[in-house]
Image (cartoon, rainbow, N blue to C red; front, side):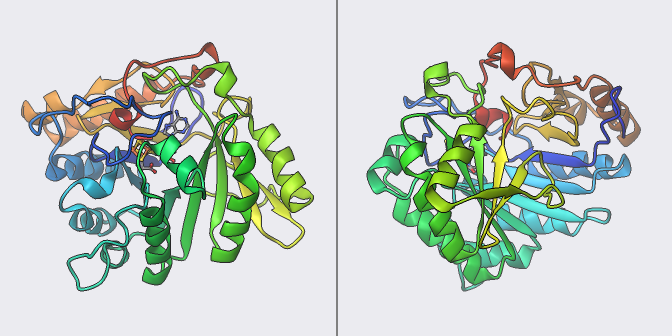
Length: 332
Ligand code: SAM
Ligand code: SF4
């Protein structure tokens, strides 16, 4: 699949739930949530059907996300079905990590179940190593659980464990050094993500924004000189730099990197069955109606292709896009 601007689409992010056990300030409002009803959420079988049709059009990589994907029952079995689908080469999962160390169904942890299911990589959100600061950002006192989850991911044998830190002025400055040291000791790949205006919250103003460039300067002040390593890439838009000791750090400059969208290869399926060609655009197209209205695979494929045709050249974040739709609904 290729869009009008030459983006080759091979990557589908699937948000399996809009629910979450945390309340990150940049992601969703703190007050009581109006979650989707169970009938509004796609069943796993519906998600697998969309994916199967997507694979026939060139999708080969999947990231399972949310909301907090581990809060949806049956997530490990779903991951196994995704990873076992012919044509799928790589399955990753994004999580806040707090449930990874919980008991799974196979006698070990949930992380062990996910590894056995065939997941290749895990991205774990970690904005802070300070308990009070973690609680302030995530709305929950769950730092110990998140750290236990990171250990569980390593103990399960995941080769690729990435830590994602969203940058916020007034918060991240003091966390960058400790996070770099923590990632070095654990052997995790740490990435810093610029705050994007993808929520309904008020915390997304200029005064909260800390750029990837500023984070790079703070990282150098804390850990020494950084050199670009353009030859190192992961599936996404992160740009990597290397410390003298060989530790790599990723910077995801959604707002300040003007080339951010050039290599975009993604589509997003929301938990309520909308296909979004871009995280930073209002465009979304309903697949649920087609799925439940008896569309056959050829019709679904046509629908997916028509969404790809409407993929924008680049996101609309710099116009302070606010989707009036929670990040958890879209799937970060
Ligand atoms: N709950 C999981 C987690 O926290 O990793 C998966 C879903 S979360 C929406 C996916 C990623 O989006 C996380 O790394 C989170 O930090 C990031 N995110 C959420 N809101 C964001 C925002 N406004 N700007 C930048 N990143 C954001
Ligand atoms: Fe939940 Fe992840 Fe959003 Fe935080 S970023 S509120 S953990 S979905």
